[in-house]
Image 1 (cartoon, rainbow, N blue to C red):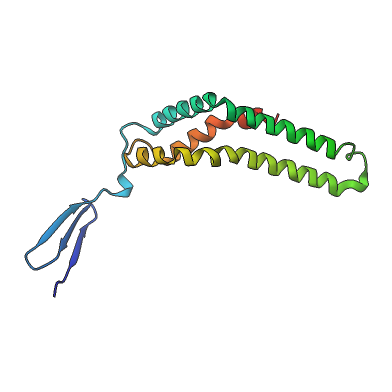
Image 2 (cartoon, rainbow, N blue to C red):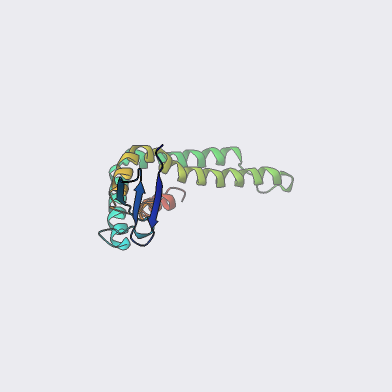
Length: 155
């Protein structure tokens, strides 16, 4: 019968596997805690932020659709809830209007990421696993690159 045992040296990341009495396999494993990148996190963020901003500027169709959706929803809410603020008996209508506005802003902001992420997923996976950048820096750059649209469209 073949018996296998595994010895681990946590400091060096060296793993020795004994399959049979005389056979031995040595593997070097990269520790998850010692992920090092070629550049600092700040440089990663700057490069990814610039790339995200350029992608946002180049996609004028999506920017126009975001702005148009906000304008149309504002007009719709203005028509539906016109002159509701002056009547104390319509508190539930005022509350529903505020609730709808908050939900629209939340989902309107998240929708950009939801729509664009599947198109970028293959590139992100390849670049991240090649240790080009940390996912946290990608996410931060993506959100801050989209921040002008998040602020400008609702206003």
